[in-house]
Length: 347
Image: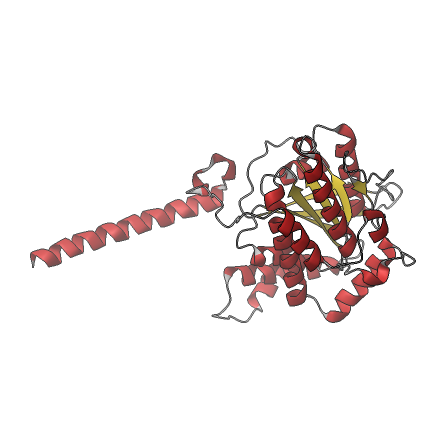
């Protein structure tokens, strides 16, 4: 009943899009839930990055799902739930969003931040290590999209407060703290397809690792290389997602690895400019340096299925029935128009 009242109370706005209306409903529902005593504790993980780099596989492993992995076309939502031990234990919910493609994705990147805010938000950026000539383009698109979403949907105070929290995560006494451009929420950079990357030329691996370490350090992120074929790496990234989504384990990083000849694993605040072997710098210069040594290809032309609605993996009964009805109405309209044009021609 409260949801119905909230819908009726909304003033009609001819300039509103369907996305705007949906966001109002989500926001109102979240307000109603927050007013309930003893309600569940919620956190949010946003998984985005290179297409086909293993984002869906990571999510399925994290949520203990055996779903057949299919391409994610736009923005998908799922959730995990846990109940803490003890009498009267609180239920913990982790909202999980996945962005399928980075092409024209700025509005979609805003949705999780607009829905949940920064206080319990975290991002996992998955990059395809097997495509060094596309890696930085994807990373730059993600970072620009996240920064734009923050500037449009968060107040200056929110951003400042969360940056202070992230500085504590990196380490208040970290020697490089004053040179970093820390994002206002936890970020884990994941280098996907490490099994393919490990067989590349040593100089390429060295260059990619140095620049990924540099950008991760600059924004206050953790860095993990990953392949589902390596059980140890799979456990590290799953523990890291459990830490972001449910708060446990308290320390998902049991070890640190910085050698470019093996998989990189660096926790929050675990690196430094001195260890990387570069002078203090910023994300813009890191990107320019990388792109000058490994020119980036244009990724604008991404193949999308002609009609995803006909894909059996994307069936939604209510939506499919409505679409079929609209298709029939369109065909009748086209047929009527064709008959009328023929009649007018005869006249």
